[in-house]
Image (cartoon, rainbow, N blue to C red; front, side, top):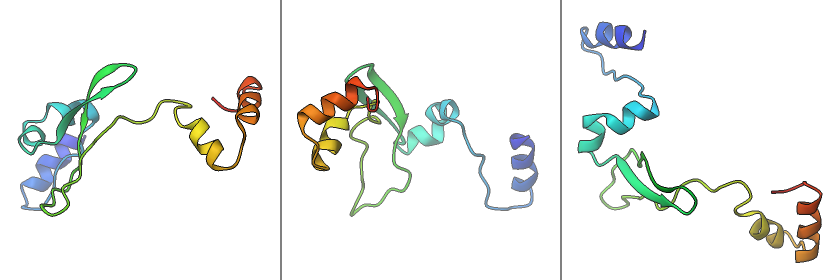
Length: 99
């Protein structure tokens, strides 16, 4: 298992760490101490806890500002950027081609 390999490799002084699943990462005290868990408000589901940005750079720290987009959230913007009219987008949506 992952934990058995971690114990085996740690004992021979290798630089090793277990790969955590999302639940483990959100609950891990080291991750929390590093400020790796953030809470973002999703416009549909409300507050969501998620893993933040791993590398911590002082000059360019980065931040998580939103959750992943929902299906179809940016469809109109993308298609308009490609030159589709509002009527064409409505037709694509009515046909089930886009969300």
